[in-house]
Length: 120
Figure 1 (cartoon, one colour):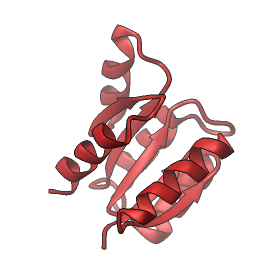
Figure 2: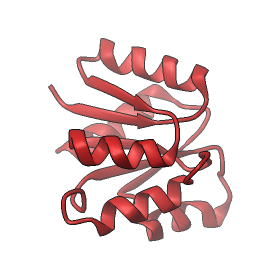
Figure 3: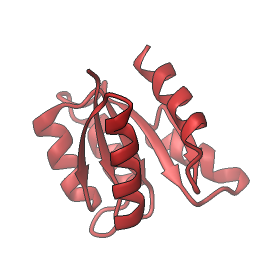
Figure 4: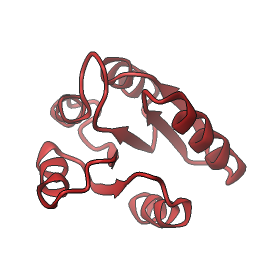
């Protein structure tokens, strides 16, 4: 069972996504801000992180850079989840170290394909 950490500050998005992923057989934990996401990812070492980019305390770009810089978490697969769907936003997420990018509102079928591709 793959382990997924959802880093998302919006309670409705967090609850909906965690319930749906659990039904698909994933073990899921959630963090509500970027700092908590970095701490949980470092401690739990999930197989994949779904990272909202607009987060309090530490935004998703900074959290991703911190995870990719630390030896313990450098190889974590991180998928950016963001409502920012402008041309440069995908490139910005990838430059921060994200392995893939998906837009909100979440299309679960599309997101599951990206998760499966990242998990191999």
